[in-house]
Image 1 (cartoon, rainbow, N blue to C red):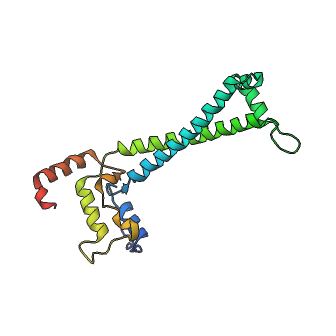
Image 2 (image 1 turned 60 degrees about the vertical axis):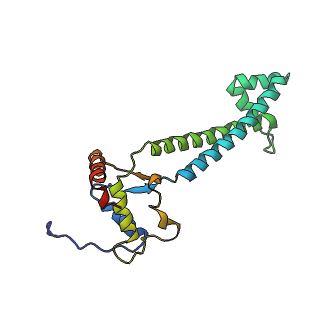
Image 3 (image 1 turned 90 degrees about the horizontal axis):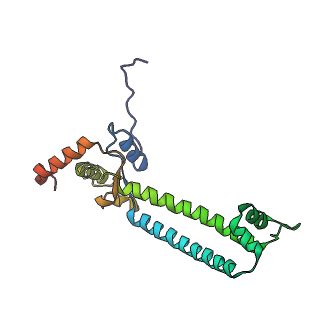
Length: 197
């Protein structure tokens, strides 16, 4: 094929394919703007926190029971992992735990481990998003106009709940915001704000 010849671009289907094509075809990728879903993220963190609080309370109750217990076995399980693991994972010929109490404690410990990992990862991701640079105001304006198709039939690219994609500019995150664009956009808005209602 002649290297100077380019095949004509095929027009993507309206909807998700067209929006994806728009974002992917942007050379500097400054239009890769997505919702953070701050309200949902906050709710998810609150729910994870509440789950962990319940697990913490269960752990504290079990610790208090063992503190009052005269069982040497219980004390050993708090000081030596191998003993705890051996007693907690022991099974009789029918597959039932030989020590249901310690088996339950191990199950709780593993549940806490998984849940706290999920919680910390969610916290870290949300923190990263909150510390990310916001999209330039001019980029949001241009993308909103394209998305809502304001220059043509006023038909949004996506329907349903996705139609509100650009409704709250404070809930948006840009995957790429060049520093020079930040300064340029700020200058344009400061000196030509009347042109961008």
